[in-house]
Image (cartoon, rainbow, N blue to C red; front, top):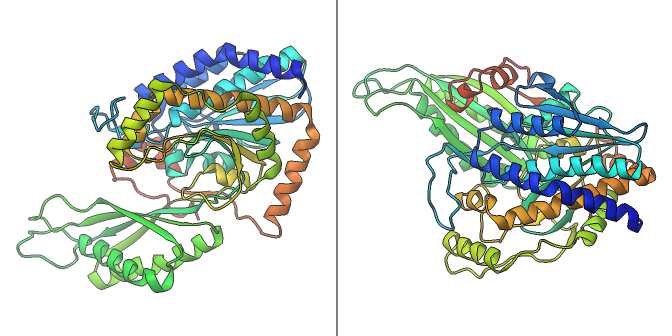
Length: 468
């Protein structure tokens, strides 16, 4: 990029940054569960519409999704991904200690910051393109329910990603920089066991909780020998009302994670018969309610290198003494006695596999993708109250601003050099290789789009095979 291009883009970001910060703070103050992000979707859609984007709300029949488009003529199409859902049970005040705010959700993964940074980057990009007369199209996809690894998969299946040549996004992590490495694939499903209720002092058979517990015990017993390479998580979402009523229903949410998507599927298909057997042994019924299947990130050195170059222009987050003091106290309260550690550099991260899943990983197998990371202290656990507190603090607004400005610069660089997008696509195709990609899979569509509260109340009924 030449000096004029850099200056125009950075000036555009400077004009947008205050609004991006205000949006991140607004969404942090009103956390909403996945598929119930009504206020966040409305605020982001209004912001983009006010900046000249043509906004389609409820895209792909998903009420809290949107697709916003601005074009400056024929050229490449760059997509930016906005996330804005929060996590249940992690509400916390912006304090460096556990201080529940009484809300049923909290931004313990910083999606409020992603919403502000990525949407702000798209708006800054639009202004820079006008100033520089760069031709192309900007698409902002508002993607709900990332915490369930659901929204982007449903939107990918529904065609919302069609026509996009390159994707950019961001996330808080433990390193500043651009990753070009995988994260874990994830299969997610709810297992429902149904029995017969009765007085707990007399009726003991056909107990749905017995079936769920037997399933978990059997799965854990077999794990060491059959699938020790996979990361398997579970939680009992409903297990009965009181000891004096034999539970006639129990719900078990299962996730299977592995770097290799095909191996995650294989392990899931080994677990499924265990659940069926547990139901048979206890005289109960079993229903599989599939939620989603998501691949992990497909590394792309061309995209990561472009983003890293933009980051070097911006420089790492400019944390001051007050920022560092807050993060240090938060880290100490989260992990007492551990040394404070915060990445203050910038790098391309190629080694290893990140130990989490992202539903934009699924999209990265179809469209070249790069993600801008900014650093949390290593003592602050993601999906923890401490991350909720952190995500509302000035220190993380600075991190998100670093990511947003870097995304805008990277997007301008890609638009100015379409050959780089072509090279990223060649790399994507090479890394996919001869694998036949199964269609994006997610379940519960009618429930999650029509009655998401029933999902979070654990009363939803599956959709009879739509997912699989």
